[in-house]
Image (cartoon, rainbow, N blue to C red; front, side):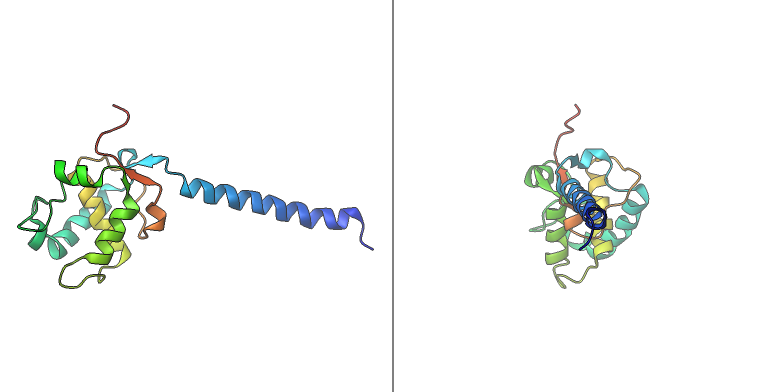
Length: 150
């Protein structure tokens, strides 16, 4: 029969690991960040500018103002349409439906870069960390039309 100490060590390590993993998942899922917190980098937005010009500008316009039925990606209408959604929601829309002639053909990094450019065009500040190339990793970043800090 094993002593209490022999069982206690592995159990304590397992419980500590479970608690840590739960805390990490809860933190990753918490909607505590907004686009006003600098969720992309200036370099990423610059890559996005190039990708946007190649993949999006023909329909959405060089200035992101929209053309014909393609909606604007900057300005009041865009902000109104996407207010209180998440960066993950926008990522899924872009990746799943764009470009119109080849939906779903853009890779995660390209979509994140284009999204960074869209955020920059809407006046959201750049930060020190790039948007991740995956919708679930953006689920805790809320798009807010107005800066909650004032």
